[in-house]
Figure (tube, rainbow, N blue to C red):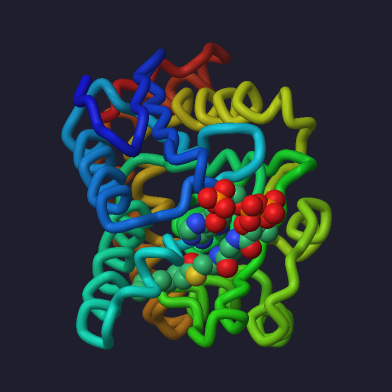
Length: 261
Ligand code: CO8
């Protein structure tokens, strides 16, 4: 497995765990870390043994406390823009990966940390997790997709509240608002994320992939176009061997044996 400086990668039972690993600065995202995450996502995309991905943060305290403020402080308008574009590209690559991605949010998920979690398909939060977009405290706005993904997840009014005030949400609040999909005890975080990954991995992979595409792409369309997109995605699943297997297994009252084709 590829060795990276700011990110740990572990592949076990088809699940690639990507751990953002700069605990001394609460896993803040500098350029090198963003590039390492990009390399890890490329590995997830290209390695056929990888069936699902978990993204988490090293240490007890933080998932990711945001973009690296010490680095950002030194940027000018053009280099600042470049760093925004890099983060946006990497997070889009996470969102568009044809495999399920679960964020295991173990602590502070602030700014870019909340944004990387939102680019994942599912967010499992530790009871200790704190979410927020505190950029206004620094004289900037969210720059890694926060102004777009937060309102899509929790609604326009609430997103404005949290982005304008910079207030943090507890894990329970994030759950109530639909930002976190499950809240568990800290010691159960990774095992729960793995269980969820395994549950998804037991389903027909092409069906999961097409559902992900239909949801992601459809949400950016008007309803009629989204429904038409769904019909095409559905038709793709209908042509798979796994569709025949899934329906045959149901009728024969046995467990389906999916092959991902
Ligand atoms: N960047 C760099 N260093 C950080 C960051 C960060 N985002 N967060 C924490 N650290 C460092 C601290 O400086 C400290 O370092 P040191 O030990 O050398 O002093 C260490 O991590 C531990 O942090 P604290 O001592 O502050 O720990 P506390 O428990 O007192 O506080 C907090 C924890 C509340 C999480 C606090 O650290 C904090 O507020 N961090 C900043 C959170 C923040 O504002 N995040 C948003 C950043 S902006 C952003 O993400 C924009 C995304 C788009 C960028 C576009 C690119 C141009």
